Length: 181
Image (tube, rainbow, N blue to C red; front, side, top):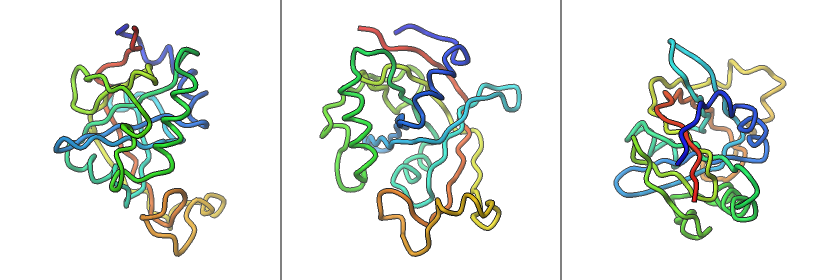
């Protein structure tokens, strides 16, 4: 494990986001990962923060509400590119309520250093975060241009777009590193 300054790798993270990165959560020995395509890195309250956006009705939201911890796992380098795409695809197309997505995708979990949710060997750029603030993004306050992300009548049980608002989870970055063999 090579500790890094996350701001030196922000470009890599932003380049990977549109293709998908993982947010991993854990509670009561249940580990779940979901693919995210929205996120930001910055400084808030004098603290390095990763902000992740998760819909209210997602299984990940339940786990985050229980523990307030998450890892962000990002593909990095070419070594595990094929495996990373498979894991990201699985975690973006199934619900953790019904299936252990990480096991089904063949992901290799690595214990995080400061929190419970694990890192993932195949997505080695890792950010360990503890939630310090959360904010529901009321749909009524969202510009009409972005309402396409909230179609009416599609509830939270649907994987993909639905009508639930997102919750912005501001995670204090406790540690960031790249997993090495």
